[in-house]
Picture 1 (tube, rainbow, N blue to C red):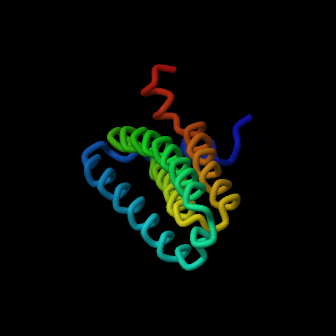
Picture 2: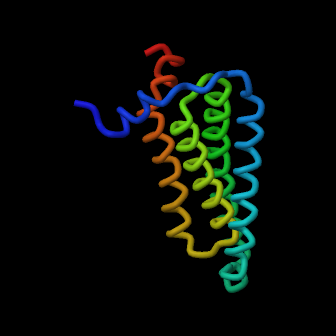
Length: 143
């Protein structure tokens, strides 16, 4: 039995691999723009002013570790954009990684840390979900 998303992805014509650089540049621009807008919007709600400086440094270090995880995920998405990919799958990958990037900017401002963390991990879970429906990913990994 196949799900609706399986059928939609299977019927989507794959894009050609003629413009992987354009897709990768669009991905980087989308991530940067999402993070910048989120930082500007959440900065006024920052709680860093009332926190101990050591706690702020610790929280920023933890956000840095999450940033390394997000960078690895973005590298995987960038690699995937170098190969033929269905448009709905590409949009799903882009949206999920942008959610994680926005959450990182949100967490850096230290505004509503639990909600920002939920969004970060939600974006990563979204990447896993989209990867589940990406037939090109499983073919590229040798499954």
